[in-house]
Length: 331
Figure 1 (cartoon, one colour):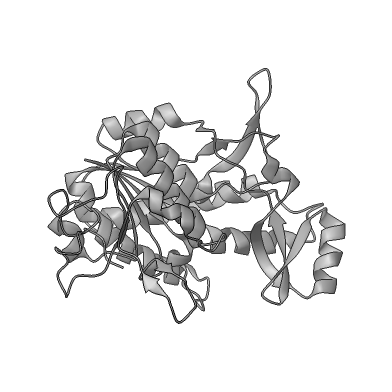
Figure 2 (tube, rainbow, N blue to C red; figure 1 turned 90 degrees about the vertical axis):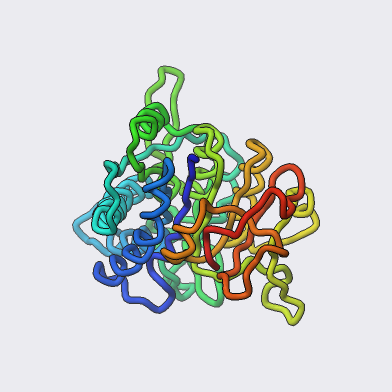
C-alpha cells in the first residue's frame, strides 16, 4: 500500500511550548515511532506542516536590522523544509526505519493570477497591537487583519497546481525510499512563458499538497495527523459531536473553521473524490495501533471501546463493516 501522511505543524510544537529544538525533536520522536511500523510495510510519503516554525523565522527576519527587508516567505518555507526534514529523517532512522529516508526541498507551482493573491487570508507570524501592525504593514507592504484581539500579517494561500519535483518523488518512492517532501506546502513558485521559475510571497496549504501528491502518486490512503482528538461538528458549542465515518456528499452541509480543520476536511474530500480511496483525520497514533493494520476508517460496529477514536472520510460509497477494519491511527 502507498500511504501519504500529512503531519500538522502545530502537532510538532504544541500550544504553549517554547520553540526550542529539543521540544520539537521530542514531538517528532513520537511521530517517528508511530510512523516506523507503517514504513516497514508500505510505501510512505510524509508532508509536514511548518506554521509555528515559519512564524518564528519570519519574526527573526522582521527584526533583523541588517536586512533591507525581511526574507520572503518562499525562502523561509524552504528553510523550514530543510530543518524539519532533517529532524524527521533522523528520528525515523532512530525509530528503526531501515529504508532510505530522503528529505526533499520541494517547490509548488502556483498561478500568479490565482484569486487568493487579491484576498489574502492566511495568517503568518506573531500578533501585534494594531498601531505596531500598521507600522510594519506600511514598512514592508504587508496586508494585516485582526486575529483574536491582535493584528497579524495575512498572505495569499493559492491553489497548488503541481509539484516541480514530482518525477524525483515518484522515482524515490518506486525505489523503496521513505520520502519527506512538500513541507509547509512547498515553497510557492510561479513559472513564466520561458519556463523559468521564481519564488512568490505566499503559503500553500500543506494538506492540499498532500492530497494532490496522493492523487498523482496513486496512493491508497491519505492520513492527516494533527493535534486534536476528533473532528467535531458544531465545534465549540454544547451540540459538539465527534464525527466518525462520512461520505463526501455529506460534507456540503457542514461548516468547519477555515483556518484549521476546514482545509484538512477539504483535502480529504479531494483525495477521496479523485481516487475512491479513504482518507483519515486524527491525532498521533500509537505504535500499537499503527502496527496492527494499515490505517483505514473504522466501522462503528468494529470500533473497540479502548481503541483511540479516528475520524475518517469514506470512499465514493459509504464504508461498511465488510470493507473496513479498525483504524490504524488514533485521535
